[in-house]
Image (tube, rainbow, N blue to C red):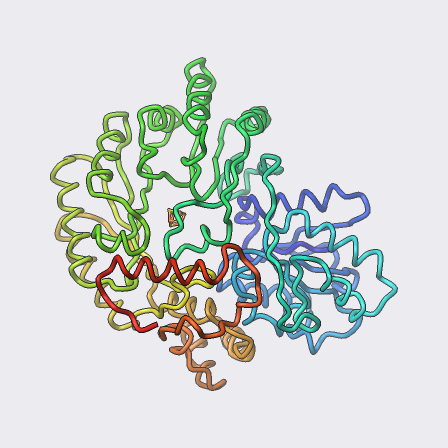
Length: 500
Ligand code: SF4
């Protein structure tokens, strides 16, 4: 079996999910597994010696790299072109769990949800049935909860698998060649209870699960035997009920003379307390990030990020008093109901921070809103590209005037992300041609024309609440009724109407 990462080896060696899944299969004596990457070549040049290839699929555009890996080993890209000797090709990860439909032509099956334990069950089932035909094996696989086999399941409901965090997951390989050099990454919690209306990381991972304090500390000690560089991971790690204790534990070790370099994936504004910040500073962190998403309190209410300006100022004060040198703020443009007033408030906020905290380094990073399946904003289309580009220019110019650096994701690429994110099975030909013609923006545009795909329908249109969405057959809690109610509640906070 191959486990494939659609990116360079350095990124795979920093990917906790990928490495942990590899570990669980590698430890099984009855499974012979090898990891393959975009930039390496397997020792087995003949893919027919491999029975299964599993791809990790975390970002919408990963399909380009997945196709290039299949091409490298001369494996036909489409399921229909592969013969009985071709390995079974499957994928799992957040993109697939949210909506596998655009990719059904290319994979024999999908893993829906947390794959850590499921991968092993799947590999063992395939191994035990190697004498059977592919169709027989796929039929058996389709009976496992969390496995979706497009050729067998059709639109039968498929249950998303949610793993209990009964242990602390960590990177079993610490490498010089990793993107995060020699860093031991451990998972502190999974999911985020904040439920921002656009946030897939939150909605795909409900309920939020925390690793026990004891497990975190013993795993941390394991990592510190091999490296002094530690990263704590989770969508909302500062919400861990014992986060302060974890920080205090690390702080005491540093005070006792242990050299520890620590980074954390994200900070919540109410987590800015002296204990946490002094630990970050003692562990070498100079700056941190804070996602505020929107400039005005009105829009932050609409997206469910109920964050006041006072809380933001308070966080900066604590950060500065305890030794942090700067903040990078993350925001999103084009959120449902956003107007130029909201953007202007972002600029005003930046100005106030700049004036109040002289010498404190601030910068901004922005992406544009992409509607994601299984979130309360799945029904809302994007703003069109030209109008978003104008907003980018406005913010860039205004922040530049204040001497504040800002970075923006590509609005054009975000548009195609939205097409795929709300895509259906009709997109197979479109993505295949886009890959064959260079995997560029131009290739995506031309391919849409050639395949008669109305990309605006997927990216820009508002959908009605009673529309059957391509991913509705995937059963994810809390379910459609909750999402509709939440979507309406958030819109009520906007004092504006959206036709959905
Ligand atoms: S706070 Fe961050 S991780 Fe949590 S729901 Fe909002 S955007 Fe997602």
